[in-house]
Length: 288
Image: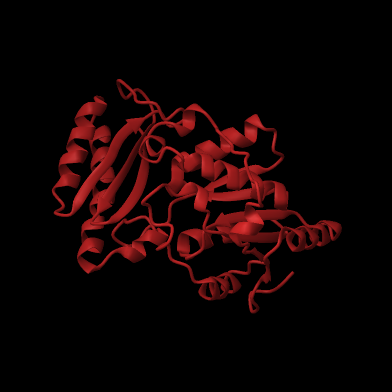
């Protein structure tokens, strides 16, 4: 549709989106989708590049989805800069950007929601009870609107990727879900749009998330098999940062996200930490 020297085509309605995708299909091209909430960083752009490598046309959605924010969360403050996002997407060759408003995504009388079940309930599901209902619903809507061959998500939102894979399998959605590696800053902090909230001191303290995950990996490598011991050590490290407050730190089964009693294979270390007013999540797969 376009080359890397020009901005991607911008559409704002489902009708425009479907016409553009249909034209690409008629031309024999496969379709990739990278769903985002904008405020794009290198993590998002890695999804676009992955799509470009596998698909004939890459669609990027930019929509700050109100239904995945709970009361008192940062919906109003969430960073938005469509113009800057379009420039970044031009640099990596995205073809089509779908940037609807709330009315386009959720029409009058919208009353249908997607509940994915057990994989959505622990961790983020406990802290943000309506979050995954909003995520699953908007992603299913986007998959129905675009009809992509493949859709690309980041591993930083590990539980989100599990929720989406479960939904796609259960509802027979004919889209392959690709989950791409976390992109990190030089000190290990996972790239996130919310990192923009961090001042200099908070940004320095935020490195404790990655350090604690590295500690967990080191303990497993040294033979520690009791998840309670590892969680305790991680908690102590995180709480050593002056402004850090834990929402959770857990070692869980990578597939079910349920707690484990003993480490006997790969295990996911997952955490959510508030540095001042900014809530950050991260994870690492630990292997024996």
